[in-house]
Length: 262
Image (tube, rainbow, N blue to C red; front, side, top):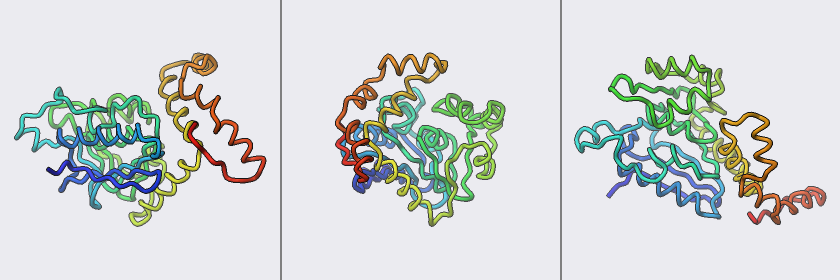
């Protein structure tokens, strides 16, 4: 049975492609499969960075598969698998980076899936939208929760309430995307970023995500106090790791560090 997901391993990089013609929309089966994929990524010490993209050159992801939902009776209250919708929007213990490679339009849950990633690289001509109010639902898989934290509140409200499309010029203006590239440069760019990440100390990368998640909602002082109390296990592990000694040593010896992740 086609689960709508293709995966490729390239050394420490995992490439995940949503492949469900024509719109890369996500049904219950695909959501469960993506959850399994990202949980495996989380638990595999050999993998250091993931790339998420869509098949084809028009649509990154159209969100929830409405045709399937109508025909099968699927509902948002159904079990969508580990990590919630699309396996990533609620995978709170994933402390490894995911780069969204936006190859086309990101609609509804597709946009919410992009918002769940750590970096966004998009092609010229891609758009983002949350048209849920037009079909009697709300963008509650990350649109409501994340978008007003990423761009100005009133701009986010405009998108949430009207469902209008945000073009790439506006996305760049509000800092929603990290890089905009020509279509032929999308794959090279995301792999360049992934390899830069993989060159860093694995525990340092994971500690950054762990701390950022843990201090969300805190004041600056509370955040400093939480870090200084060593509230975060991966951060604590990093400080007492072999890699913590290897980094300065490699710098002094003018060589590339030999990270061990421990």
